[in-house]
Amino acid sequence: MIPGLRQQYNAQFNQERYDAFLHTVNTEFGSGPTFRVAETPVFIPRDLKVKLLRAVDDITAVISAPGFIAASDAAIPSDLHVPGEPDRSHFIQLDFGICTDQSGELNPMLIELQGFPSLYAYQHMLAQAYRKHFDIPADFHHLFGELDHDGYIDLLRQVIVGDEDPESVVLLEIEPEKQNTNVDFWGTRQYLGTPVVCLSQVERRGDRLFYKNDKGVSVPIRRLYNRIIFDDMDKHADLPRQWNMTEPVDVQWTGHPNWFFRISKYTLPSLKSDFVPETHFVHQLETIPDDLENWVLKPLFSFSGMGVKVDVTREDITALAHPDQYILQRKVHYAPIIQTANPEDPAKCEIRMMLVWHDSWPRPRLVNNLVRMSKGAMVGVRYNKGKDWVGSSAAFFEP
Image (cartoon, rainbow, N blue to C red; front, side, top):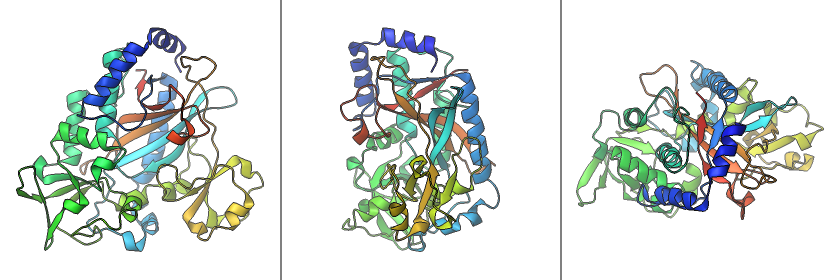
């Protein structure tokens, strides 16, 4: 997106550098990601950065408004309501597709948002690996708010660990060693000292929770860094467990499950911004749009793009058994603006702006970013099989 910098990067790129870069990514946390890592970061020009920051402000103003909790209560399924909810989401993810308008200017357009943790450890390591092995301008940044490495890790520690002993703060998942994002679990453990524990290993004694450490000693759990998504829980109905997450226990949460529903596609129709495409709940549509080729149908609580219909028909909409569980969102068209090693095969990108929200702050704080590069019809592994210069990446922003 910054032509001179892009040309310089591409000219200096070679397979040996990329292989050395991948070695760092695959070994820094003991084992590497199971997903593809792109050959390049993305360089964000200042004017696009300003728009992204404006978009983040527009959206977080709604999320942090006093009436947001009451307005989003209906988003939480009654059978999945978890007690002990804090008054904020400690983690917020805002996903923007990078598009161009009629004049050719770059614009970010919100695609999805999540009140759920993202890859805070992995993305920081990934950006550092790009900087280690490739020529990234020293004044370009991937962190925000003038954070450096130590400041960033300390901020994560404040939000995730708080005042507790890290040994009593558990990163909670279902079969974490099998999860596609487990590289971030190992990175969190390395940066913060928090153990990674499967739900099946949690022991309940009354209203207290415990797990056994590597020495077999039973350790009380005082704080949960939750990484479990209920969709995944449904797929593991046979997982042995002593505790159902909807049962009250004496524990603090960071990344409480209720906020996964509150800040989600359910929120999109309430957002009004130049950087948010028009979105409607299907059950509230007065009429079905005639130009359905310009709309996308999405289930409210799917994960990783499951259930999304890009080529929508009237029959798709009228056949919905639960239209209140779907939104219709105006399509945005990602711009193929990233020149790759093959000049005739540019890539598109989606940028996730990653925020944290400490209990003492009035508003969430932008701290990091995540990039997914694509040459396919959509962002995602199944749309980019056999392609290069696609996959997991990071953005460096012009100061």
